[in-house]
Amino acid sequence: MNKNITFTICSINYLAQAFTLGKSLEDTNPDVDFRIYVVDKFLEKKEVKHKSPFKIIEIEDLEISCFKKLFLQYDIIELNTAVKPYIFDFIFKNEQDVLNVIYFDPDIKVYNSLQELFQNLINYSTILTPHILTPSDSHPFGQEEVNFLSTGTFNLGFIGFSRKVESEKILEWWKEKLLDQGYNNPIMHTFYDQKWMNLAPVYFDHVLIEKSPGYNIAAWNLHERELTQLGDIYFVNQHPLIFYHFSGVNIRSSDISRHSKFNLDQRPDLINILKDYRNDVIKNGYDKYRDIPSFYKKKGTESPKLQSYLLSIIKKKLNLLFLYLKLFF
Image (cartoon, rainbow, N blue to C red):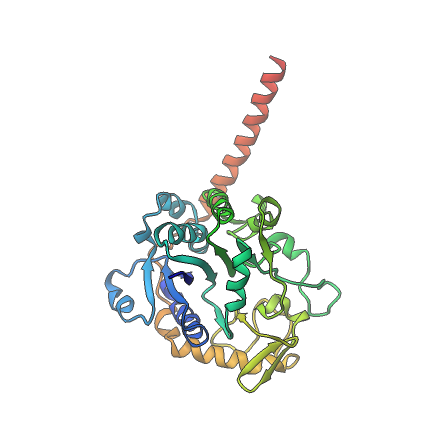
């Protein structure tokens, strides 16, 4: 039987959010497999893993050959994002009955069926969602569009792949890039795993840019999206809400998000959805997990970034030198 898989990636301190995502998928898409890949080690916290309502897989169980390299050079957030294409690749290569795989950030909640996504993946290899769909500079509460030149056109809190040759090509290319260019480093023009996907629709075929406003509503696109509620069902600009990305939401606060210029007085349409999400995350163990440090979190992570940048400069200079010597000597 062909399977559809959804997964998230987090460290132990984000398990409450991951459980909230999982339960939303369980409620809205009960036939879809969900698992949590944890960039962490449980060690003396084994009971947390055993009591999880969802399947948890520790990242080292995947035996990613370059994982030590990734760990040594990246900080904990960069590491969590850099392993993403390796997990997609691992699933497709080791689970032959899997047809489609979708990734969600742990701070997402799903509100509706994903069937349309899976239908689109019949014809497309990859699905991406843009941060914004309309210009935002002219809106008093819109994000500055120049920000997306730094962080990327697409938000990789969501990405979907189908089992296709083109998907294999994208994943191999993406893995190669994230071996040493998955930093959050403006000097290097990189932003985690995300900014590389700017190039995917150019380099590869069958990449769908999903523009329905019901996908990936978040603080950065609130200028163009209004939420309405009919009973228990949410709509975005009269389109069904598929998933909301609660990025930047402080669970113990009452604001919208640190990424938003709006406040709740200006956006009463968001009061209920934010309140319910905060309650769900707290109920799923937020205070229990939030302060647990990751096994892979380390000090001095700026030095690998600097070293990598300096090495890239040296490499470019050497290449120019060799070219000069070849041309004139």
